[in-house]
Length: 204
Image (cartoon, rainbow, N blue to C red; front, side, top):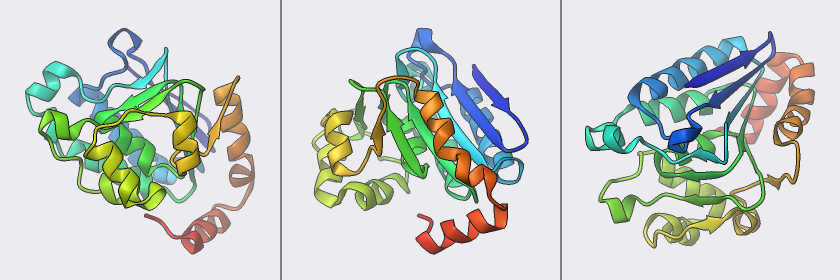
């Protein structure tokens, strides 16, 4: 349910469970963790996306009730994405919700199709967000807007999220093609050069 397409420089990981809104099981999360960790030395760029009309609804409901909602796997995944020395892109093929927001927040860039929404209903569900997510969210959108998502439970259209700085580009067509084009300079550069520039900008 996680599909990986890769060559020597670029890896594309696709959440492929569209019949369940790409909700994530523990097994799927482990696979994503392993991909993100291996990509640190195996790929100059990593793209995360989904199949169907939803990027991910977060934890599978049954798995969440069994403890996945508070699993350290979410933090392991976002940490591995953040540590990638090249360019990471979250290509949102649709709405992103819950713990899956951590993947998007950890990426260097976030692009999206029109009409999608971002939300993280931890307050309503009685869970705490993953430890690194609130600070990453606040860094992108500011503390008040982070509270709008995490405490007020608002579902933010990506068109509004773009004005906040949470979404970097809205793509009307060829989402993956756009993501690929954004990786070209990084893939074509010496990996040490890309790593140095990313370090100068500052990793979260």
